[in-house]
Image 1 (spheres, helix red, strand yellow):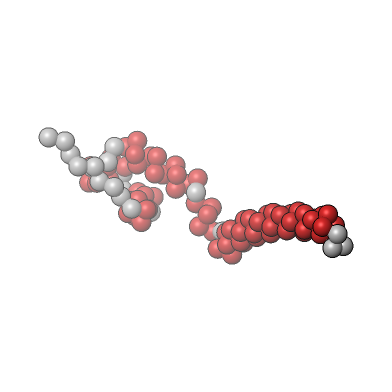
Image 2: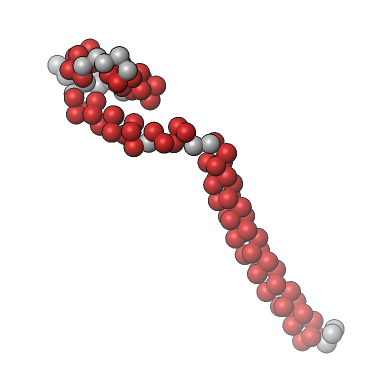
Length: 102
């Protein structure tokens, strides 16, 4: 019978990595305890070190980039609206000229 695969949360993964890095528990012991393959443990460790800088970034800068994206999106939408409105006004003026109202 197959074993059920355990999906660990981010906090659980960090706790397991911390036990190895801080408490100096050997990888083999942790893998036995949590029924992990060593390759999985080392992949978690690699991801942890690659993304560790994000923990020290100010949340303000992350919010700023999302705000900037939203502003750019809204500016593009406003530009499109203005272009459509301009075309409609040109048509309106032309129709009035054709009907002799201007």
